[in-house]
Image (cartoon, rainbow, N blue to C red; front, side, top):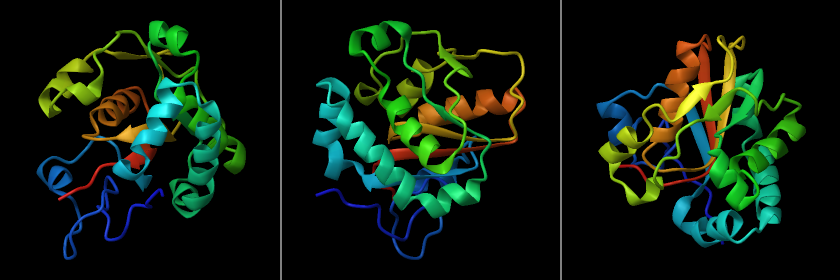
Amino acid sequence: MPLIVPAPRCSICGKAIRKGRNTCHDCTIKRPEYNYGRALYEYRSVQDSISRFKNVGRVEYGRFYGRQMATLLAEEIGKMNAEAIVPVPLHRDKLIYRGYNQAAILAKEISDYHNIPLREDLLIRVRKSEDQKKLDVFQRQNNLKKAFHIAQNDVKLKDIIVVDDVYTTGSTINTISSLLKEHGAENVYFLTLAIGKGM
């Protein structure tokens, strides 16, 4: 049974944290590049389902979970007041191999439900990086250096929501947020289906 991330949650990344804290250990040590974000479920409770969605072609899982994100996180999405929803892109080779981008499937459901434009043309993954789940936090950061490019010179959008399936250390979201802000975005938020626990 999927477990919704319980309160109290980190005010920045949304991980479940101990009572009496406002931010998790990671966000306290180093403030992320994004403004803040939310995930719907605790990762362990949907880990097997996400694996089937990503690796066994169960696209219908993604559509269902995308609608869950759109409805159960509706209040938070409204507060973000975004002009666009941007899914984390896959490298072309991985997209051909898998046949779909799992983040784009989630993002489309959120986009359709909230009538926020979906922008799959904004970001390009130009470097095929190693699977992030096999790496530690420092390796993840180095793994993503120069992995993404902006498709245009300027991002003519003020407020953007980045969507991905899983948030672990936040390296992917952080890298993309920094890039979007470097090219003109003012506020970058994120939504993910699942997230690990904080401290």
